[in-house]
Length: 190
Image (cartoon, rainbow, N blue to C red):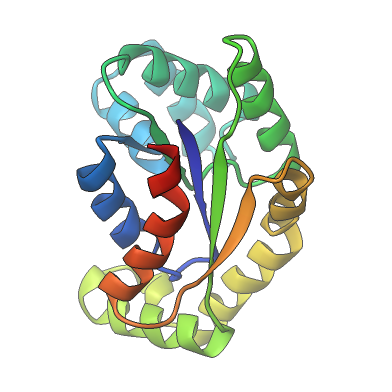
């Protein structure tokens, strides 16, 4: 099972991913966490990634995919994977599709958490009270992150909708209500 949990910053992906991991025995793969882990362990991947990060550049897609491929291969005892924060661009989606196709696999489901912009801003500002992240406390920065998401990332929904695997899920309500909506899509697959 390969699932992309999708949505703008502050839509609740991390919270829901944790609950889905527990319920279905999936591995949560966050590229941000993956980069930090590889850098902390001073692996070859981590050292290469750090070269780009230290110059303020994005880690190239090819290196990200190689790190992802190695992580997926190392986690062979799980029922599936939740990709969080990846892919972010159409090029990354195509690279992920190619990586999975080599093993005769594909993305089974993309679940997009649908949350209005003002609610996202409210959530992130609230998170900013405890996150320690300066980008979580400035409304202009938050709105810019949402704009970038809509310009660069939201096209991925259409990419996977063509294959009939992309679904929008109402991201408003309690954590458990949202979780139940997500599970309605996943339960038939398990």
